[in-house]
Length: 206
Image 1 (tube, rainbow, N blue to C red):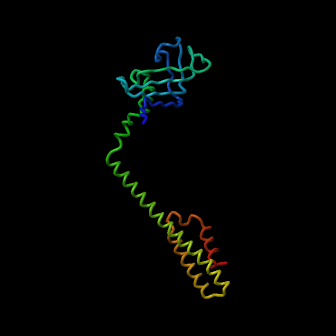
Image 2: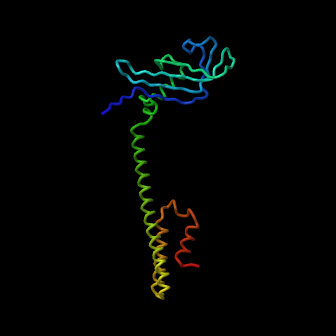
Image 3: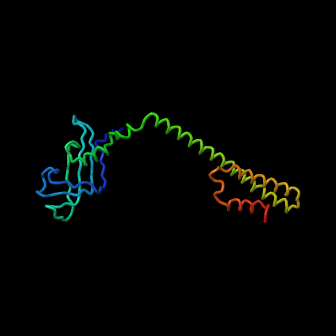
């Protein structure tokens, strides 16, 4: 069986509003007076292997100027062995997206009490959903039974079994009432057309 060992995690995303990289923040391999306005960041988080420690590298691509004059095209600036020593904003980007580090503020702010409250809230929501599902099932069942009895009442009329047809229509009326009462609270009153539809179908009113 093949063994697959991940060597790195790469994240690439567009960015706007980041501080402009100045000549003194770059590694000196560019011509004097160069600055770059970032539009794209690529972060590569390499795992520790072969005796080498884990590391992070960054590539920042953006529109560039020289001595304040806008130049054509874009330029890419590379940073290695960070994030210490990088421009502060870029170091923060690297720490923010590090797949091996959970954001400290999220860990610190989420207490045991928060966890208990979240679990209770989830349980209450689950109970509510289950109750609504049961109510919806009952309402649907009553409506289907009412539809069935309506069709049987029509058949009784055709066969001149008027007393049976009358009894079935009384049962339909009761089933419609039960279906209405069984509906979940958040469905009651959603549509006035629904009750009108029931009245037309059960044959009780014109």
